[in-house]
Image (cartoon, rainbow, N blue to C red; front, side, top):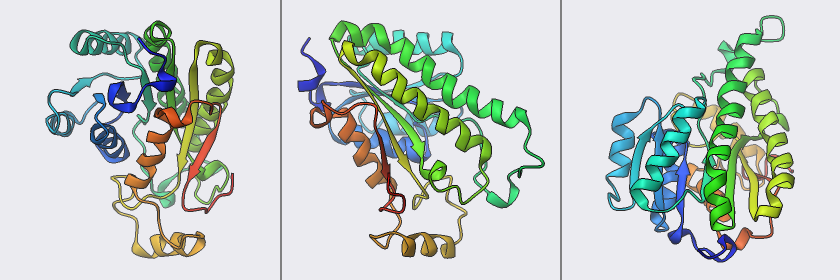
Length: 259
């Protein structure tokens, strides 16, 4: 099989974790629109994942798997390969443990418990590690691969006390950089795409308009980034255009944060 550096998206088998709803569903649809074959991973959103996969039934397959469970991830990879007859070449680590994006309800410094941090680390970091390790044999067989981790601009701009979520995403950025060094000789790139408040996903559905307006006014583009615009940046890292880019964190938030 050809090296992925010259492999267009429509020839790839892509795994998007947590793709049943929210930002993950937007990313999954972006890949489908580019002609890719797609694994729509989900944990609880069975109906939504099945509906998304039905939009391109010959190219999409919904598979339930808890990404924090290494055995479940290995089984998902095996099912994906059996169904499409080729290995997963691009992994988008988007899945997130249960988390309420409500700054007023999040624990502050004096009430933050290790169990909250552990939950986020186990889902975000262990989940990404599981999917990457499960995909590695197939990527090495192909001779290249793409790993795209979903991050946040909150560790550059910590305006809300999402201590546990932000710490886990910061650890994922560190893993992005160290894995890029480790896997580069295999032709595998590892990058992160980080967003801020998006208009509108499940996570921001209850966000007041005043908050959106404040964010928009703070950006050079004077608007809030859409999930579709964020997904475009994910596509870049899966495309041949990014073949010489690895270990990077691209912030997609309308210029609010300068990375």
